[in-house]
Image (cartoon, rainbow over all chains, first blue to last red; front, side, top):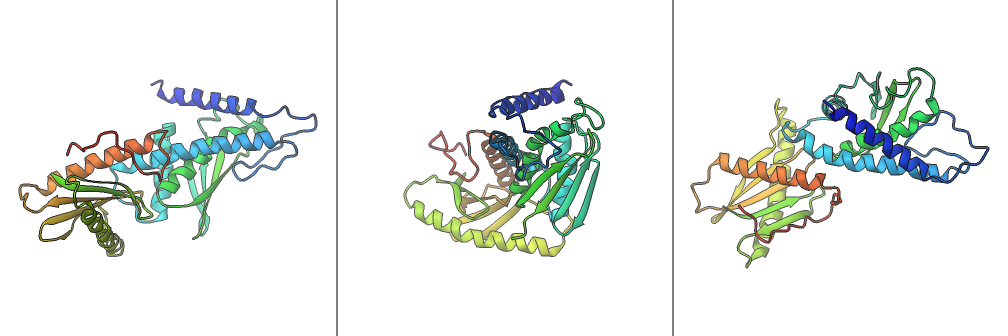
Length: 177
Length: 131
């Protein structure tokens, strides 16, 4: 039963290690609530921007491997919605031992996946405290979603946002060919 | 016993192709290449047929006078193609399916290997495959 905790510890260490490598932030750097995964603009945050995409890249590679292993026994997916449902159920259960709470389609090609108690954010705080730290903890998971989708044949871009810990939303935008 | 085994990426280039009689390899490469058309046909036919369940095992793709070609497609659109000798009539469908399942498991292990970059050719450490 200690399995879930092992990944949480590893993830915490990954974030701490990659964040520490960034150059010392200048006195004027403030971190407001940022969106992760696209390009977080900042003044002298070049080190940080690099680190977030490194985390996302790691998540991408893991997602590619999981996208190969997890659906191995299931039958072929027929449409995008099947793939999204697979993400919310099987992938989330395999990685976080619980299912994702909500999935909504905004318009063609954009899906919003919502988790009301995201396991990697639950130990941090509940509410508005540490809102600015949340994006670094979501980068790996964005990459994970993007990697799994890419193995299953869907090119996408995934961004995450939090309004209040530990709820978070992952927005998946599918690139139309 | 399979005479030739091939793993084809979703962009239709071979990731791994190995045949047992090492002479005349080009003939098998050509056979695998032509079987890709049949695979695409089967996959699109299944998509249109609105069957409730879509199987990964495609079955016999096409028979020639000496060989039979079988196909299997994964959820990530990676195709496995196997060429077997027609004279070996003892091979049943179940055995072909189990061979494909083993191949799928090995391919999944390769994908999970962190030193493997998806899209590269697959290097096998053993010169001859055990099947």
